[in-house]
Image (cartoon, rainbow, N blue to C red; front, side, top):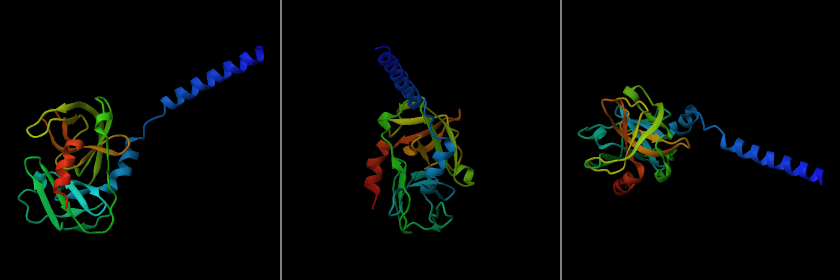
Length: 205
């Protein structure tokens, strides 16, 4: 009987330890997330875009391409190309570009309903036009209302000129928002990807 109780006690401690171990599994490092998604983020005329479909569908902000006659997209491998088509929605501040360079890596879309204030995020963009880089931070606010959108995401991840059209991703490397501006306090604003999707789909060829 004593031996049975000893075995049961050891089993309980083992289960508790396993639960603690699983619960304390560290999140991927920011660098790991960045390296995972970097191939799916592109430069667009000194700013940023990201690959929505492997066939060459790229999303960016309308203000990145508005009024520009010659648009250049630079991929992760350094290859540059001119879009075959550019469709925009100025009110939604979104643009969809189509390029033809073969199959491309894409960003996975997050379920933003699972996001919470305080979650770690990574902002990826062509900061100051110097190439695709990443900054990290947390979600500061959710559900912020704007002129067009009702669920803008606010982050304290540093945002720079050239990051417009870039990706705000969670620690699984899934896009939760499209970066479009920063305020005077240094907070970044991103279009909730769930709100952006209907616009993106309507603009996609």
